[in-house]
Image (cartoon, rainbow over all chains, first blue to last red; front, side, top):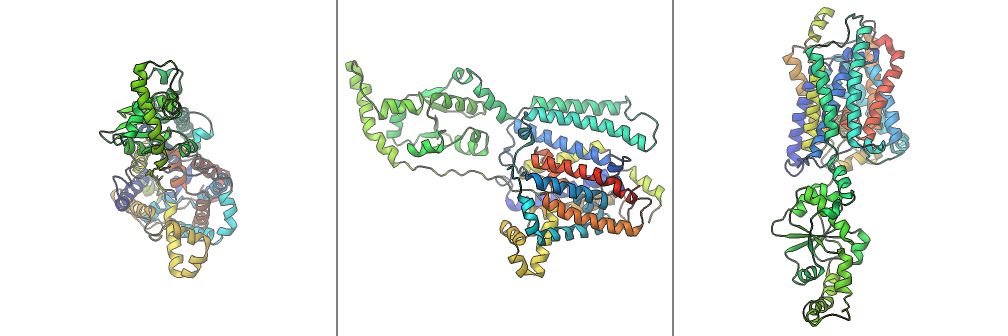
Length: 395
Length: 179
């Protein structure tokens, strides 16, 4: 379903959405105290950790929300912008911004908030930030080597750390809780407050409980994609799945009928597809089943979808995943395309066949062997599929 | 300029930080769900710079790599940009919030032992550093650190770690500005 842009929210309406979420963003930042430069830098001198509390709570909340939406199939993460990783630019840029934070007392978002309520120092900061971007733009040839160094693509951090998404989210929530506890102690010590930082009051008990519930939620909502792919690979899972199999004979007959009522969903790799194209087929991958593309391709009423791969095991796995994702009317090709080639394209009558077999099945197969190769040759090698493009975001 | 105790009284009116964080997280989540992208701030500055340079020196903008690449990515002009609309929203939202909580005033914040001159140069230099750093790091605290954390981007989280590491590392040397 999500992201709603561009299918449900048009690109022009999206500008109005930007205005609206910006308004809420500015409101929350200002209400949290981010328009005060002394409150912001308090984090770095230990006298006020508001920024850390707000920032970490917001990050964890949004992250768990993203995980939950993906888990329940409401957000297609293949379309969401994941900030790309350019290692050295991230490190050096981060350090420069860190220096800018303690020298200037703001970051860009908070300076906009502060300027909006009349803070003169924030207006000076924004002037400086414009100048900084201008310096970068003019000096781009000098920066470009560092800017483009070590391109890692757009990995997600749990993949980079080689742990599961659930474990990463769980650990991050625990880290946030630990940080909140630790900074309360530091804050009191720096400000000379004698009473204990965390007391057993309904407020703190409630906060702690909410944190633990969120940490548990991280473990209870594994990535839908990762967990289903894993479940489909578990020994016996695909074999045990009651797939509705189509015999090679029926497959051939439907091809000869023009294939109007049947859509072949082709899970073979590109080279195999090019070698033996199937008429009216849609190239697909396991990952594609989780994307918006799947709903576009697999939800036309009145069509029979046949999952085709070289072997039946792959077809079963894909059908198993599709079934779990709620797609119906999925059939698989019995024995895979290998059996289709053996029994139809390379058909050889067995020596000891009965008269009944010769009159019925064999006559059909001989005819199919004559007609089907022509159909396959006439098939376009790569039918056009509209694949949604990832949204371009970032600063 | 208001006296210290008035300022303290105002600060008590700030929202509970965990509630504010939760609300901020929900705004960010709604943004990702609707638009497929996170929040940002420094991108709007970039749009402003590109628009200004295109207006003042169009020839230079067309020949320079940075501006021409940006123009190619934004065929509708630098200011018809999602982040520019969002930044306008931030200004309105923060203004309304200040209005509601009675915090609207032209004033100048600084540390107790800093001079005005120190604060002005500090704010200017800090802004310049952010301008450069956020371009290099492909986003600032909003676009790289916060939004990057929400989608668990490796790059965003590395940037976040180094923003805070840098700030803590350099804090001691500029403490006169703040404490």
